[in-house]
Image 1: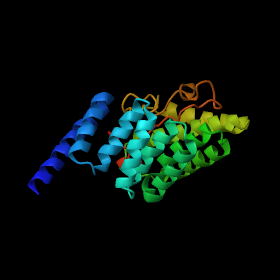
Image 2: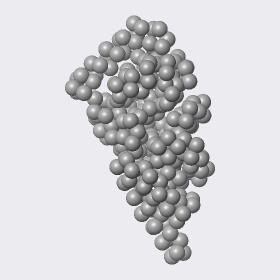
Image 3: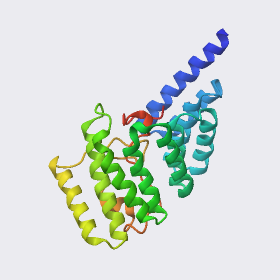
Image 4: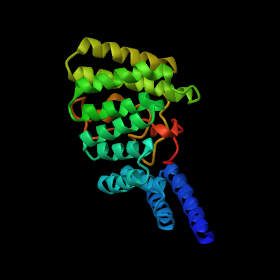
Length: 246
């Protein structure tokens, strides 16, 4: 019993070091620490998910998916596990699977649907389903007033501006230019109201982990060319703390 408790303590310590390295953008060291945590405690789902997130940050998508699948197997009732795997699927171009995981994440944790809808909208746009993307971004905007009041006001603001601008991108792809211009105007007005939307702290080295982004930094030339889904916020269980995986 004492030996098992010692192993768990070592696993937790390694996990915390992994989170610290991840937050600093040192994903190689983060992977090593998460691997140590898994070695001490193979059933530590958060360590598998954390290592998956670090692999994904380095665009090792298949390794990320494998780790995240193990995290889901170990902790199938945790919304974060599905969210992290959804991001790995999305960044690896497997958008249908990503959308299923985002749906399951929202089913398990209804407290952060507005944020997850943004990522689901990105996945819909990436596979060319702009109508679906518009639905998701509209849903995110409608849910923003109900988001937990204890989150950072800047994070709330990022959701609002991101939803307007992303919905405008999707509307442009549908040639609904009048509606798109309205959204660009609304999103730009929201950003100007705070002078400039503050980017959220990146996960690892991702530019896509940041908060808001210039329109074409994510689109790679326009709304029709989205080879990757860009993440703005943390998984739902993090309540937008903008830290490493938990």
